[in-house]
Length: 236
Image 1: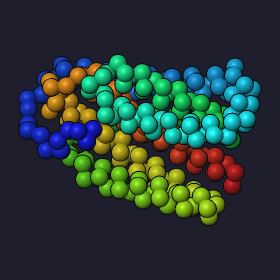
Image 2: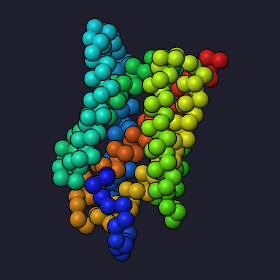
Image 3: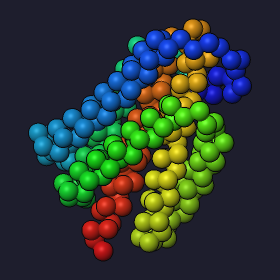
Image 4: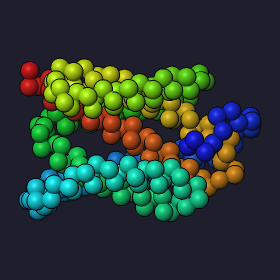
């Protein structure tokens, strides 16, 4: 999305086209979440023994599960407007891989924790996405601060991996929730602005995939942080 100018010229909004774009973007994002949920469910039930045995016997697979979605996400960001179909396929692959990852993580939590985290993240996400879409207030400054805070949090979290402090992890989860709340609203507003200014010049489908990826990542990060909060709260 950095391929687009931050200060484009103003253009008259095509309301019908904008609504079609938003519907497609949120539809793709919802599909990605659904695919992840189905994948996680099947991995935890039908294929549980096979998957867990295979992962246990191939330690390097964990790194592939962690790093491949990042590579695919970068591929989507660079190619979405030029190759919408290929980007859609990569989005579905990201969803499947994260679904497997969720199944491995969810083994540490109760069904109640998972349900509470999912419902909470869904409510927060919908609220902030709607806010970001309809507000007239420019959220770019808040979004930039949130991105900077996210980078700092990632670095601090890597350091905490060596400290093994549960208290710090707990606090960081709350900070991460706040960050992704802001990023959800910002990404929703940013994608709307990109379509308004560039929708006639690039593939609507490609932009929709790009926006769906951004919002999908916001949602799953909200979910993972809330899951950690609920899980750690129950252990106290």
